[in-house]
Length: 139
Image (cartoon, rainbow, N blue to C red; front, side, top):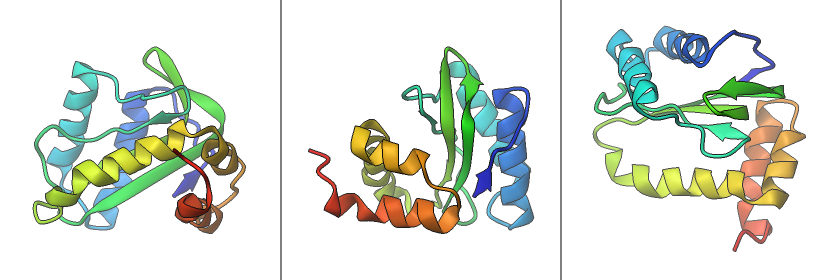
């Protein structure tokens, strides 16, 4: 989880997030290349608040979600995003990817949840807010 990272392009953010994940042993360098390839094919910005860079085919060594949360929107192709969520999934966890991905999209498409997430200041607040999804009406 990173707060208010100022870089100049989606490529720079993907490289930054990827390097941080490599330091933790979550991915290999080929993962970053695959995320960049995926992004060049089609933007991963789903709303004006969130982009979810992910791979086409590369699996992570450990499943993770790397979060960048900026107060100022980050230009992302034709959108802007306050949140970047780089997702890496191991082969064993791929069976959970579709459901987890849909849950993330739903979180960021629900105005009440999004408003709360935008106001978080650190990792623990972000996680606690995301986990309160059951308490918020998202249907």
